[in-house]
Structure formats: C-alpha cells, structure tokens
Length: 237
Image (tube, rainbow, N blue to C red; front, top):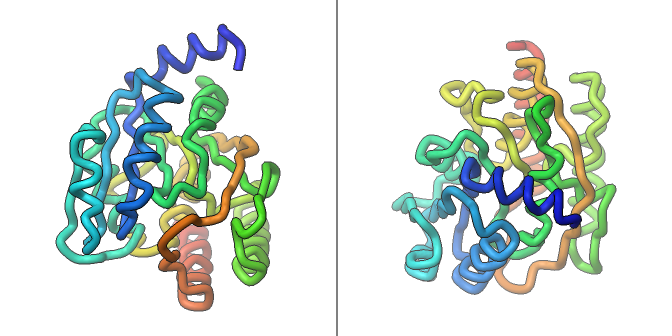
C-alpha cells in the first residue's frame, strides 16, 4: 500500500465501526482484533457480538475490543450482525468473521476502495486467493450457484455474494428493515444497497483454512434461506 493510500485509510479509520460476530471463537477472536488494529490503528470502534458462546469468547474479547455485546442465546449470524449494526457508533460499518479465515490485514484494501461514489465494498474470495482447505467443494459450488442466481435477479456482476468480509456506508442500508436470522444476512445487506441505488465494488482477498472450531453453516437449509431472501428482496424492491 502506498503512503498516500495509507494516509487516506488512516483518516477514514475513525469513521469505521468494525463489527465482529462470534460464536465459540475463543481461540481466534483476540488475534483477529489485534490484526485489525495493526492494519488500521485509527479504527473508531471495534465491536464484538458474542452470539451465545459457551467457551469464553466474550471474556477473551474484553480488554482488546472497545465494546462486547453478549447475546445470551445462540441466535444466528444474522441476528448477531443486526445487533452489532444497531450498537455500532460510526457511519461506516466493517464486518469480518471471528474465525480467522479472512485476513484483517486486508481491511485497508476494502476501505481504500470505499470512495465517495461507492456504498459497499465486498472482499471477494473468488477473485482473490483460496488457500487449501479454505472452503469445501460443496460450499464452493453452492456459493457459485447462489451468486449466479443473485446476479440474474439483480442484474449485477458480483463474484462473492456470501462474503462476510465487507465494508458499507450505514446510510446505504435501511437498517430498520434488516430481518436476517442466519447466513442470509450477507445477501440481505447487498440487496439493500442495490435496491437503494448504491454502487457495490469488490476487491480480491485471501481466504485461509479454519484453524479451529467448526462452521455453523448448514448447506441445504441455509442455502434455501439465502435463495428465499434473494427472491423476496426482488419482489419487495
């Protein structure tokens, strides 16, 4: 990253709330936060939403995050992100998962792409680097199919509609209309931006294999939820 870009990202940092949904990620949460702060030291807020963890995730986050919001029961990623959006204090929202598969060091690349005419920047795994073990064949195929359906419905050319690593301007969302419960949250965020006339860009990112823990994504059930949300969003406009 050039000096000019670094200066721009540093100036943008105080306007950014980094929202990190987490469920049983005690092994990685502190590392993700530390890496994000190292990449963008000027971040306005680091907010962890502990989605009913039973392994001490919230305790590990306290002291390194600015705020830790604890949901007493595991409600789902969509519920956690919606709670985080409501609690975030800055006009720009950044999202990253707590499992360490996305590289927080690439956050400046997403912020640098968020120019004045851009509403959302998605960190795309599929124009970036997928390391060995980063995604199963079944989930890779499902993601591609869902992305294709999304692009047909919304006349877009997005390569990774389900990416959790992204930044968005709060004003580009109808926050009070967010309804996602589980992994359809990424689709909902994107269709909100497009339905409101916002411009969406993608930048390449690196996706690593999960070191510990397990994903809660259920391919068939969550795939159908995502598809239903796409269709409903198109009908509702």
